[in-house]
Image (tube, rainbow, N blue to C red; front, side, top):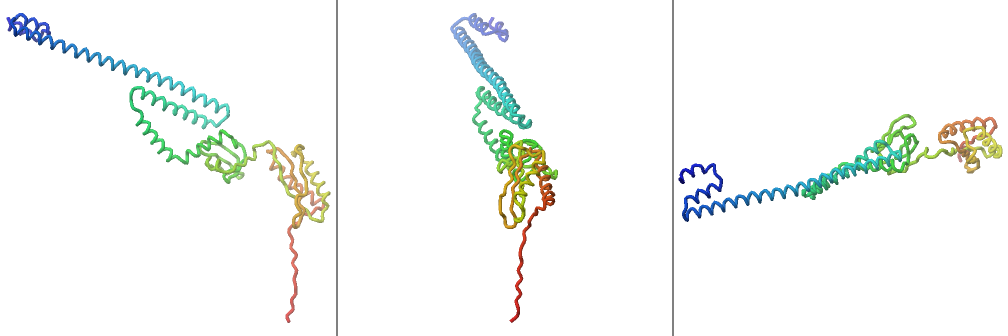
Length: 317
């Protein structure tokens, strides 16, 4: 009977083993039954405990993963909103398109860096070492691109504070020319003889900037020297007539015509009419030529430096 039932042991569970042992009877059978029941209970407890632990770990990780996903998507939405806000502010200020795009993207990715770190940290990953590595890498890149970053910062200041705009005639970093383009790192100028000069923005911001086109009007400064023998009232009247004959000269502010200096060989008059900025060089050249021609007609002389040389004859003794 035992052998017959034992032959089916491979297909039987722990309850079959207990039944076989009970049928065999005796104290030995009772001991085997108790041992089988203990093994069965221990096995069940193991699998139940494993399931419970796996479920708790899975639920905990799933909850963390869900929170990390929420942080990522909400953070990305906020980053986009702030980036678009920066873009709109720069558009309202009519800033350079290249700088507008660069700054808005820089804001977006800077915010996304913090969002990604926060999401990874929520998963239980230690981000301290990651931040340290990123900081060291950023420092290395910053040192390598120190000059470029300086030019970029200067370009941002130029666009924000607008010491000049495209089309202005400026003098900066020892260069004079018309501003053709303001880029992120450089400013392109065109000189009067049509040469293109690329000037680093940091060099411009580190120097004195003279913008000749900043205002709508400019003053033409001329100095006219006449002989000490000439009639000063006649000279003044002639200059006034010349100024009044030019329609490009503005009535307000009033023209200044006055004796400015009693020089070594001439009496110097200053002629200071106001004109539109666009008419500056035309009035400057035309008025200078008109003064020379009119003074020749009026017999007003233009003195030039003279030296008297005295020769002394020395006779031999």
